[in-house]
Length: 415
Image 1 (tube, rainbow, N blue to C red):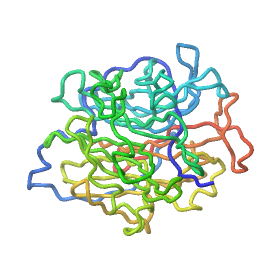
Image 2: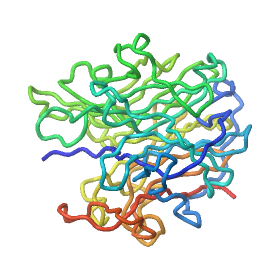
Image 3: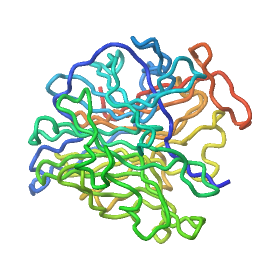
Protein backbone atom coordinates (compact mmCIF):
# COMPACT_ATOMS: atom_id res chain seq x y z
CA UNK A 1 0.00 0.00 0.00
CA UNK A 2 1.20 3.48 -0.83
CA UNK A 3 0.77 5.95 2.02
CA UNK A 4 1.43 9.69 2.20
CA UNK A 5 1.60 11.19 5.71
CA UNK A 6 -0.83 14.03 6.41
CA UNK A 7 -1.85 15.55 9.73
CA UNK A 8 -5.34 14.07 9.54
CA UNK A 9 -6.00 13.80 13.27
CA UNK A 10 -8.96 15.29 15.08
CA UNK A 11 -8.05 17.02 18.48
CA UNK A 12 -8.52 18.98 21.84
CA UNK A 13 -9.04 19.89 25.54
CA UNK A 14 -11.18 22.20 27.60
CA UNK A 15 -14.14 24.03 29.02
CA UNK A 16 -15.16 27.67 29.40
CA UNK A 17 -15.44 30.77 27.22
CA UNK A 18 -12.66 32.94 25.86
CA UNK A 19 -12.48 36.60 24.95
CA UNK A 20 -12.28 37.78 21.36
CA UNK A 21 -8.81 38.45 19.97
CA UNK A 22 -8.16 41.85 18.47
CA UNK A 23 -4.88 41.30 16.66
CA UNK A 24 -3.42 38.30 14.90
CA UNK A 25 0.31 37.73 14.58
CA UNK A 26 -0.09 36.36 11.07
CA UNK A 27 -1.04 39.84 9.89
CA UNK A 28 1.73 42.03 8.52
CA UNK A 29 0.36 45.50 9.21
CA UNK A 30 3.42 47.56 8.36
CA UNK A 31 4.68 49.20 5.21
CA UNK A 32 8.18 48.02 6.01
CA UNK A 33 7.80 45.34 3.33
CA UNK A 34 8.59 48.11 0.88
CA UNK A 35 10.85 50.17 3.13
CA UNK A 36 14.61 50.19 2.39
CA UNK A 37 15.65 50.39 6.07
CA UNK A 38 15.46 46.78 7.17
CA UNK A 39 17.35 46.30 10.42
CA UNK A 40 20.27 43.86 10.41
CA UNK A 41 19.58 40.44 11.87
CA UNK A 42 21.34 39.76 15.14
CA UNK A 43 22.31 36.48 16.71
CA UNK A 44 19.58 33.83 16.75
CA UNK A 45 19.34 31.19 19.43
CA UNK A 46 18.04 27.63 19.30
CA UNK A 47 14.65 26.25 20.26
CA UNK A 48 14.45 24.48 23.59
CA UNK A 49 11.58 22.77 25.36
CA UNK A 50 9.97 24.71 28.18
CA UNK A 51 9.09 23.34 31.58
CA UNK A 52 6.55 22.16 32.39
CA UNK A 53 5.37 20.20 29.36
CA UNK A 54 2.78 19.22 28.35
CA UNK A 55 0.71 22.43 28.34
CA UNK A 56 -2.55 20.60 27.51
CA UNK A 57 -3.70 16.99 27.65
CA UNK A 58 -6.65 15.74 25.63
CA UNK A 59 -9.62 14.30 27.46
CA UNK A 60 -11.30 17.34 29.01
CA UNK A 61 -15.09 17.41 29.23
CA UNK A 62 -17.35 20.21 27.92
CA UNK A 63 -20.76 21.41 29.07
CA UNK A 64 -22.55 19.11 26.62
CA UNK A 65 -21.17 16.18 28.57
CA UNK A 66 -18.84 15.11 25.73
CA UNK A 67 -15.06 15.20 25.72
CA UNK A 68 -12.34 16.00 23.22
CA UNK A 69 -10.23 12.94 22.48
CA UNK A 70 -7.26 14.62 20.81
CA UNK A 71 -5.26 17.80 20.22
CA UNK A 72 -3.75 18.50 16.80
CA UNK A 73 -2.94 21.13 14.16
CA UNK A 74 -2.25 24.02 16.58
CA UNK A 75 -2.29 27.62 15.32
CA UNK A 76 -0.84 30.13 17.83
CA UNK A 77 -0.79 33.95 17.80
CA UNK A 78 0.03 36.74 20.23
CA UNK A 79 -2.66 39.43 20.60
CA UNK A 80 -0.96 42.66 21.63
CA UNK A 81 -4.15 44.56 22.46
CA UNK A 82 -5.51 42.08 25.00
CA UNK A 83 -2.06 40.75 25.96
CA UNK A 84 -3.20 37.17 25.46
CA UNK A 85 -2.18 34.21 23.38
CA UNK A 86 -4.78 32.98 20.89
CA UNK A 87 -4.79 29.30 20.02
CA UNK A 88 -6.84 27.38 17.46
CA UNK A 89 -6.60 23.62 17.09
CA UNK A 90 -8.49 20.62 15.75
CA UNK A 91 -10.26 18.10 17.98
CA UNK A 92 -12.38 14.99 17.92
CA UNK A 93 -15.48 15.46 20.12
CA UNK A 94 -17.14 12.31 21.47
CA UNK A 95 -18.92 10.57 24.33
CA UNK A 96 -15.87 8.38 25.02
CA UNK A 97 -12.54 7.76 23.37
CA UNK A 98 -13.94 4.72 21.55
CA UNK A 99 -17.18 6.41 20.46
CA UNK A 100 -17.79 7.97 17.04
CA UNK A 101 -16.50 11.55 17.11
CA UNK A 102 -17.37 14.86 15.52
CA UNK A 103 -14.58 16.97 14.05
CA UNK A 104 -14.35 20.45 15.60
CA UNK A 105 -11.96 23.39 15.61
CA UNK A 106 -11.35 24.89 19.05
CA UNK A 107 -10.35 28.36 20.19
CA UNK A 108 -8.49 28.97 23.47
CA UNK A 109 -6.75 31.90 25.15
CA UNK A 110 -3.94 32.23 27.67
CA UNK A 111 -1.97 35.01 29.32
CA UNK A 112 1.07 32.83 30.02
CA UNK A 113 0.94 29.78 27.70
CA UNK A 114 0.41 27.64 30.79
CA UNK A 115 -3.19 28.13 31.93
CA UNK A 116 -5.77 28.02 29.12
CA UNK A 117 -9.38 29.13 28.82
CA UNK A 118 -11.07 27.09 26.11
CA UNK A 119 -14.21 28.27 24.38
CA UNK A 120 -17.03 25.86 25.14
CA UNK A 121 -18.60 26.12 21.67
CA UNK A 122 -16.41 25.15 18.71
CA UNK A 123 -15.06 27.96 16.52
CA UNK A 124 -16.04 25.75 13.57
CA UNK A 125 -17.42 22.22 13.23
CA UNK A 126 -17.47 19.73 10.38
CA UNK A 127 -20.46 20.32 8.15
CA UNK A 128 -23.66 18.55 9.20
CA UNK A 129 -24.59 18.09 5.53
CA UNK A 130 -23.72 14.50 4.64
CA UNK A 131 -22.99 15.57 1.06
CA UNK A 132 -20.67 18.43 2.00
CA UNK A 133 -17.02 18.32 0.97
CA UNK A 134 -16.00 18.84 4.64
CA UNK A 135 -18.61 16.63 6.30
CA UNK A 136 -16.13 14.11 7.71
CA UNK A 137 -13.53 16.55 9.08
CA UNK A 138 -12.77 20.23 9.43
CA UNK A 139 -9.19 20.57 10.68
CA UNK A 140 -5.74 22.22 10.39
CA UNK A 141 -6.98 25.78 11.08
CA UNK A 142 -4.96 28.91 10.36
CA UNK A 143 -6.23 32.40 11.17
CA UNK A 144 -5.23 35.88 9.99
CA UNK A 145 -6.86 39.25 10.63
CA UNK A 146 -7.46 42.04 8.14
CA UNK A 147 -8.23 45.26 10.09
CA UNK A 148 -9.47 47.02 6.94
CA UNK A 149 -11.95 44.30 5.94
CA UNK A 150 -15.70 44.54 6.53
CA UNK A 151 -16.51 43.85 10.18
CA UNK A 152 -17.88 40.36 9.54
CA UNK A 153 -14.82 39.45 7.43
CA UNK A 154 -12.13 40.76 9.77
CA UNK A 155 -10.94 37.31 10.80
CA UNK A 156 -10.19 34.76 8.09
CA UNK A 157 -9.82 31.09 8.97
CA UNK A 158 -8.55 28.70 6.34
CA UNK A 159 -8.83 25.00 7.08
CA UNK A 160 -8.78 21.62 5.37
CA UNK A 161 -11.65 19.16 5.22
CA UNK A 162 -12.60 15.86 3.69
CA UNK A 163 -15.72 13.93 2.70
CA UNK A 164 -14.19 10.48 2.32
CA UNK A 165 -11.18 8.64 0.96
CA UNK A 166 -9.00 9.86 -1.89
CA UNK A 167 -10.75 7.57 -4.36
CA UNK A 168 -7.86 5.93 -6.17
CA UNK A 169 -6.47 2.47 -5.33
CA UNK A 170 -3.37 2.20 -3.18
CA UNK A 171 -3.76 5.48 -1.28
CA UNK A 172 -4.54 5.62 2.42
CA UNK A 173 -5.55 9.26 2.91
CA UNK A 174 -8.67 11.38 2.54
CA UNK A 175 -9.95 13.60 -0.27
CA UNK A 176 -8.69 16.82 1.31
CA UNK A 177 -9.52 20.29 0.04
CA UNK A 178 -9.19 23.78 1.57
CA UNK A 179 -12.00 25.94 2.89
CA UNK A 180 -12.43 29.42 4.33
CA UNK A 181 -14.63 30.90 7.04
CA UNK A 182 -14.94 34.45 8.39
CA UNK A 183 -15.59 35.95 11.82
CA UNK A 184 -16.18 39.37 13.32
CA UNK A 185 -14.69 38.46 16.70
CA UNK A 186 -12.31 35.55 16.15
CA UNK A 187 -14.53 33.32 18.29
CA UNK A 188 -17.25 31.94 16.02
CA UNK A 189 -16.71 31.44 12.29
CA UNK A 190 -19.11 31.17 9.35
CA UNK A 191 -18.15 29.41 6.13
CA UNK A 192 -17.91 31.34 2.89
CA UNK A 193 -21.37 31.10 1.32
CA UNK A 194 -21.82 28.82 -1.69
CA UNK A 195 -22.82 31.84 -3.78
CA UNK A 196 -19.41 33.43 -3.09
CA UNK A 197 -17.33 30.25 -3.35
CA UNK A 198 -15.45 29.74 -6.65
CA UNK A 199 -16.71 26.15 -6.50
CA UNK A 200 -20.31 26.87 -5.54
CA UNK A 201 -20.02 25.02 -2.21
CA UNK A 202 -20.18 26.42 1.30
CA UNK A 203 -16.65 27.05 2.52
CA UNK A 204 -14.75 25.52 -0.40
CA UNK A 205 -12.13 27.89 -1.86
CA UNK A 206 -9.20 25.78 -3.14
CA UNK A 207 -8.95 22.30 -4.66
CA UNK A 208 -6.14 20.20 -6.07
CA UNK A 209 -7.61 20.77 -9.54
CA UNK A 210 -7.08 24.51 -9.04
CA UNK A 211 -3.44 23.94 -8.13
CA UNK A 212 -2.62 21.02 -10.48
CA UNK A 213 -5.01 21.41 -13.44
CA UNK A 214 -3.27 18.76 -15.57
CA UNK A 215 -3.16 16.06 -12.87
CA UNK A 216 -5.53 13.11 -12.74
CA UNK A 217 -6.11 13.70 -9.05
CA UNK A 218 -4.64 15.30 -5.97
CA UNK A 219 -5.24 16.82 -2.59
CA UNK A 220 -4.47 20.11 -0.84
CA UNK A 221 -4.37 20.40 2.95
CA UNK A 222 -2.69 21.92 6.02
CA UNK A 223 -3.12 25.61 5.04
CA UNK A 224 -1.14 28.44 6.64
CA UNK A 225 -2.35 31.99 5.94
CA UNK A 226 -0.60 35.34 6.43
CA UNK A 227 -2.18 38.72 5.59
CA UNK A 228 0.13 41.52 4.35
CA UNK A 229 -1.60 44.87 4.87
CA UNK A 230 0.95 46.83 2.84
CA UNK A 231 -0.13 45.01 -0.32
CA UNK A 232 -3.63 43.93 0.78
CA UNK A 233 -2.65 40.35 0.05
CA UNK A 234 -3.34 37.06 1.76
CA UNK A 235 -0.52 34.53 1.33
CA UNK A 236 -1.33 30.84 1.63
CA UNK A 237 1.12 27.97 1.97
CA UNK A 238 -0.20 24.41 2.09
CA UNK A 239 0.63 20.73 1.73
CA UNK A 240 -0.07 19.47 -1.79
CA UNK A 241 -0.06 16.19 -3.66
CA UNK A 242 -0.82 15.26 -7.28
CA UNK A 243 -0.79 12.09 -9.34
CA UNK A 244 -1.21 11.13 -12.98
CA UNK A 245 -2.28 8.11 -15.02
CA UNK A 246 -5.67 6.46 -15.38
CA UNK A 247 -5.63 5.19 -11.79
CA UNK A 248 -3.45 8.04 -10.48
CA UNK A 249 -0.66 5.53 -9.89
CA UNK A 250 2.20 7.93 -10.69
CA UNK A 251 2.97 10.60 -8.08
CA UNK A 252 3.76 13.83 -9.93
CA UNK A 253 4.01 16.32 -7.06
CA UNK A 254 4.41 16.24 -3.30
CA UNK A 255 5.41 19.33 -1.35
CA UNK A 256 4.43 22.75 -0.07
CA UNK A 257 2.68 25.08 -2.52
CA UNK A 258 2.01 28.84 -2.42
CA UNK A 259 -1.03 30.87 -3.47
CA UNK A 260 -2.19 34.48 -3.00
CA UNK A 261 -5.53 36.26 -2.75
CA UNK A 262 -6.95 39.74 -2.22
CA UNK A 263 -10.12 38.50 -0.49
CA UNK A 264 -9.27 35.13 1.09
CA UNK A 265 -11.75 33.40 -1.23
CA UNK A 266 -10.31 33.48 -4.75
CA UNK A 267 -6.76 32.16 -4.88
CA UNK A 268 -4.05 32.31 -7.53
CA UNK A 269 -1.37 29.63 -7.39
CA UNK A 270 2.15 31.06 -7.40
CA UNK A 271 4.20 27.85 -7.36
CA UNK A 272 3.22 24.22 -6.85
CA UNK A 273 5.16 22.80 -5.23
CA UNK A 274 7.76 25.39 -4.20
CA UNK A 275 10.99 24.21 -5.83
CA UNK A 276 13.35 25.73 -3.24
CA UNK A 277 11.70 23.71 -0.45
CA UNK A 278 12.23 20.37 -2.20
CA UNK A 279 14.94 17.99 -1.05
CA UNK A 280 15.91 17.55 -4.71
CA UNK A 281 15.21 20.63 -6.83
CA UNK A 282 14.64 18.64 -10.00
CA UNK A 283 12.21 16.17 -8.38
CA UNK A 284 8.80 17.74 -7.55
CA UNK A 285 7.87 14.74 -5.40
CA UNK A 286 10.55 15.37 -2.73
CA UNK A 287 8.84 18.10 -0.72
CA UNK A 288 7.50 18.25 2.81
CA UNK A 289 4.30 19.53 4.35
CA UNK A 290 2.36 21.24 7.13
CA UNK A 291 4.02 24.69 6.93
CA UNK A 292 3.96 27.36 9.64
CA UNK A 293 4.97 30.84 8.42
CA UNK A 294 5.62 34.24 10.00
CA UNK A 295 6.92 37.52 8.60
CA UNK A 296 9.53 39.46 10.56
CA UNK A 297 8.80 43.03 9.40
CA UNK A 298 11.70 44.54 11.35
CA UNK A 299 14.25 42.44 9.51
CA UNK A 300 12.22 42.04 6.29
CA UNK A 301 12.50 38.28 6.60
CA UNK A 302 10.09 35.38 6.24
CA UNK A 303 10.45 32.23 8.33
CA UNK A 304 8.85 28.84 7.75
CA UNK A 305 8.78 25.64 9.80
CA UNK A 306 7.84 22.41 8.03
CA UNK A 307 8.15 18.66 8.28
CA UNK A 308 10.09 16.66 5.68
CA UNK A 309 10.94 13.14 6.80
CA UNK A 310 12.70 10.31 5.02
CA UNK A 311 11.42 6.73 5.17
CA UNK A 312 12.97 5.66 8.47
CA UNK A 313 13.14 8.98 10.31
CA UNK A 314 10.28 8.08 12.65
CA UNK A 315 10.91 4.34 12.98
CA UNK A 316 11.98 4.60 16.62
CA UNK A 317 8.74 6.21 17.78
CA UNK A 318 6.52 3.69 19.62
CA UNK A 319 3.23 5.16 18.35
CA UNK A 320 2.38 5.06 14.65
CA UNK A 321 -0.11 7.71 13.59
CA UNK A 322 0.93 10.57 11.27
CA UNK A 323 4.28 10.78 13.04
CA UNK A 324 7.00 13.30 12.34
CA UNK A 325 10.65 13.32 13.36
CA UNK A 326 10.56 17.08 13.94
CA UNK A 327 10.46 20.36 12.04
CA UNK A 328 12.91 22.08 9.72
CA UNK A 329 13.47 25.85 9.48
CA UNK A 330 13.47 27.76 6.18
CA UNK A 331 13.96 31.47 5.50
CA UNK A 332 13.07 33.81 2.65
CA UNK A 333 13.36 37.49 1.69
CA UNK A 334 10.21 37.49 -0.44
CA UNK A 335 8.04 34.58 0.72
CA UNK A 336 8.56 32.86 -2.62
CA UNK A 337 12.19 31.67 -2.78
CA UNK A 338 13.33 29.81 0.31
CA UNK A 339 16.56 28.58 1.87
CA UNK A 340 16.56 25.37 3.92
CA UNK A 341 19.36 22.99 4.88
CA UNK A 342 18.10 19.42 5.14
CA UNK A 343 21.63 18.25 5.90
CA UNK A 344 21.68 20.26 9.11
CA UNK A 345 19.69 19.90 12.31
CA UNK A 346 15.97 20.38 12.72
CA UNK A 347 14.78 23.27 14.89
CA UNK A 348 12.93 20.67 16.95
CA UNK A 349 13.51 16.91 16.88
CA UNK A 350 11.71 14.14 18.75
CA UNK A 351 13.21 13.43 22.17
CA UNK A 352 11.91 10.26 23.80
CA UNK A 353 12.94 11.42 27.27
CA UNK A 354 11.02 14.70 26.98
CA UNK A 355 7.78 15.13 28.89
CA UNK A 356 4.67 15.11 26.71
CA UNK A 357 6.28 13.17 23.83
CA UNK A 358 7.59 9.90 25.25
CA UNK A 359 5.79 7.92 22.55
CA UNK A 360 6.40 10.19 19.54
CA UNK A 361 5.40 13.39 17.76
CA UNK A 362 2.23 14.09 15.76
CA UNK A 363 2.84 15.77 12.42
CA UNK A 364 2.59 19.54 12.51
CA UNK A 365 3.96 22.37 14.67
CA UNK A 366 3.13 26.07 14.72
CA UNK A 367 5.35 29.03 15.54
CA UNK A 368 4.21 32.46 16.75
CA UNK A 369 6.23 35.65 17.12
CA UNK A 370 6.36 38.12 19.98
CA UNK A 371 9.01 40.64 19.09
CA UNK A 372 12.22 38.71 18.41
CA UNK A 373 11.02 35.72 20.42
CA UNK A 374 9.57 32.61 18.78
CA UNK A 375 7.07 30.28 20.45
CA UNK A 376 6.48 26.81 19.02
CA UNK A 377 3.51 24.61 19.97
CA UNK A 378 3.44 20.99 18.87
CA UNK A 379 1.49 17.81 19.62
CA UNK A 380 3.06 14.74 21.14
CA UNK A 381 2.11 11.18 22.06
CA UNK A 382 2.59 10.45 25.76
CA UNK A 383 2.16 7.65 28.28
CA UNK A 384 1.80 9.86 31.36
CA UNK A 385 -1.49 11.05 32.93
CA UNK A 386 -3.47 9.05 30.37
CA UNK A 387 -7.25 9.42 30.84
CA UNK A 388 -9.13 6.17 31.43
CA UNK A 389 -9.93 4.39 28.19
CA UNK A 390 -7.50 6.36 25.99
CA UNK A 391 -5.28 4.36 23.62
CA UNK A 392 -2.96 5.00 20.69
CA UNK A 393 -1.92 2.66 17.83
CA UNK A 394 1.45 1.07 18.50
CA UNK A 395 4.18 0.00 16.12
CA UNK A 396 2.89 -3.54 15.84
CA UNK A 397 0.17 -2.06 13.56
CA UNK A 398 -2.29 -4.53 15.10
CA UNK A 399 -2.47 -3.36 18.70
CA UNK A 400 -2.95 -0.33 20.90
CA UNK A 401 -1.40 0.84 24.12
CA UNK A 402 -2.51 3.40 26.71
CA UNK A 403 -1.59 6.87 25.49
CA UNK A 404 -2.76 10.44 25.14
CA UNK A 405 -2.17 13.34 22.74
CA UNK A 406 -0.59 16.42 24.30
CA UNK A 407 0.22 20.03 23.44
CA UNK A 408 3.78 21.13 24.20
CA UNK A 409 5.87 24.31 24.06
CA UNK A 410 9.38 25.13 22.86
CA UNK A 411 10.82 28.64 22.50
CA UNK A 412 13.67 30.54 20.86
CA UNK A 413 15.09 33.81 22.19
CA UNK A 414 12.19 34.08 24.65
CA UNK A 415 12.22 35.01 28.34
